[in-house]
Length: 371
Image (cartoon, rainbow, N blue to C red; front, side):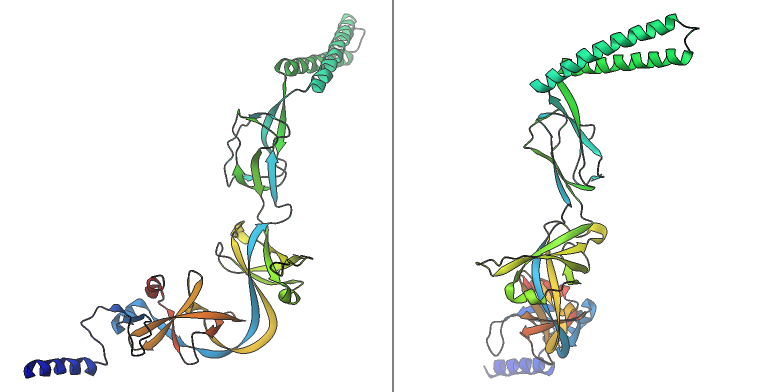
């Protein structure tokens, strides 16, 4: 019995001599117990693995930052940047091309034709036109025959003009007869704006009514970002170009210029719709994608800040990985403040000055934040 106790004491002494590091354990393990018994998960990463994973840290420090307000909005087409295409009248689709989403079109380009049924009024007008066309053919024929009989007396130019008038009259009469015999007439439908096809439901030969949307065209060279601002934030909205726009659908930042501010405050939400225009370089910003609008107040404050690269998003929450010991790391949920600059962001809770946080090699820790 005494031998067993002595052996156990020797083992504990060996572990403590290595700084509490059990090298028999895997390179990385999640530990869920501490002396304070808070049941917060801690992650152990061996020194060798830290170098291999490229894990680097930086200290939480105080920085002077400009107060920035942020609002989440939605990307929508600009005015005159969206068009729905319908048949001008019910009829049968005649299309030489199967349009698909993403196809580019230019304003005035023929998209398809609709073969429309004649109304009673249209048929009556065409019948009158046909009577007139018959009369023109008879008169042109007599004129042409008379001048040909006087060939050598009448100039050849007059005979040629008479022939051209006769052929034109015959072609018009033939076209009218065809329309009346079919009981239909083709009407071309053209693109009202330049842009790309956003939705398409055009099937050649299909009979359509005027209520069916056949195509949707969007032009996203310039888009709008619409957001709801609280009434207390309206005074901070820049009247010129001053909003910074970001979106998960695009890389980098965009500059937004104010288009309009609503005049009515919602009694339920106490917000007002505000719209910014954004030049959409390479058309990366996608319609209906969410976007964040950041507006600087111009007021500088001293704040507790961390590098932006240290913040990890997991769902609706934000985390940093605090370096607590040589091989010990702690995921901490943090809340961001209104201070921000190009490289750092204010942290309101979760950290204190002097804490060390991981800035690179965070991929290794992401899986533990979603468990």
